[in-house]
Length: 614
Image (cartoon, rainbow, N blue to C red; front, side, top):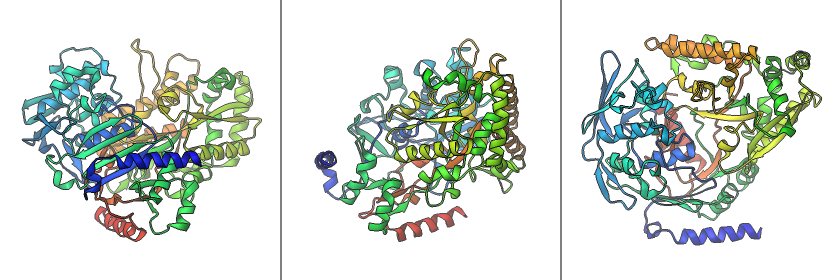
């Protein structure tokens, strides 16, 4: 307890040292954060927390309002050619780049978009989001430049016709192309600065320029992030916050609610272990976030285990390549049971039977997840009788293959995430309860709180783990990206960073898995090739996804629940889209003097639903 009090005291003193703007009536949004960004470089990072910085300090060609309507951004207008291969954007004149001290540097021009895209496609800078340019964006010669097949960037399908006219040339019609423009890899960056700094670009707040709603004036890792409103922004009249102050503390999840009680922060997420107390003592101000289908959560089986020998990675590899074994896990998994740790009140409301979330897109009035290929998909899930039938078949087949029982299944979660840890405990209890500890031994592994993804999922430090993916653009193709093939320089499969399943395509050791994946990748390619008939395209993507589900390669789980929180922001004012970075922006939101009440929240939610036509 002394430690908590001491930390609160220190934070109170820190808040007192913030700029005088906090005391003179300006609207400064203040919040804690418990995990540091890995980079400020919006051109290279694909993680949500990193992207939050870029989303608020750099504007995009187009933007979305609070009702998912696309609006002009840095581009005042745009058009596509008759063959749908050339997109032309007409930029606003007079938009400026500013340094971290808010000094104007230069005008934003079409050349800055060209320079930024060249940076994204330069292998040296290791952009993790270049696939949006080469694959989803279908830009001419983008992949060839990134792969080194061509060295002249002028051959890539992006050019500045003049300072205010930007043109993209595509390899095939891409009807969702405009929605890609809201993502970081299509943001501009000042060309001369990129050329000067190279890999040092955006490694500190003084090593990047700003043209968005806010300017990052202070960035001290594991101390604070300080943003001020860009009063000269072209759309400054729709930016209602005068600043954003984020204060670091590794115990933010615990301390934020305490500080909210003291009125020292403007929002705090309430984890499930404290929400009941808040509902009992402060019921009028406990509201929920907005459940947005931009992130889908699913459990992955890992086809390239890299954990310690004591957990039997080689034994797991034999087991996971057996379809009956995977099905036994999928059928034994009572998803609503384990989800009580995440959404105890109404888990069924966010449960998903597909990887692509419901309400993400529709065609001819039919939701994507209701298309014919998904008929009966729910039969793949929780069924104890089927689970035991699969278990019996798996034991017979795996014993013959040299597998030993029980199979150790490493379930990894993030340290410091109480809800995730509790969820993993429930999962272990439930799976072992159905299948028996003679069959599987679930070992819970606490991954690090910092750099979690790079040290766990991407490093192969799990057997069965909850993963997530956020939609990047408005098309079902975006939900195939986590499972896409990834290659080494010699043409062998590197293994995608989710479940490494594409490595099974090399060699014939696991012929059954190879056959399934060969069929799946062919189906995805076939779906992507359909560019003019939306209904046919979507139906083919649904059929491809169904292959993953029917073969128990991935287990769909839920969309992000609407978490409990106290906040002084009306979340329904914020930009909204079920993909990309729009939901990360603070633009359009007002800071209230008091925490939003339940009545105010419900009224705002009703208005938002009406405006959305729901």
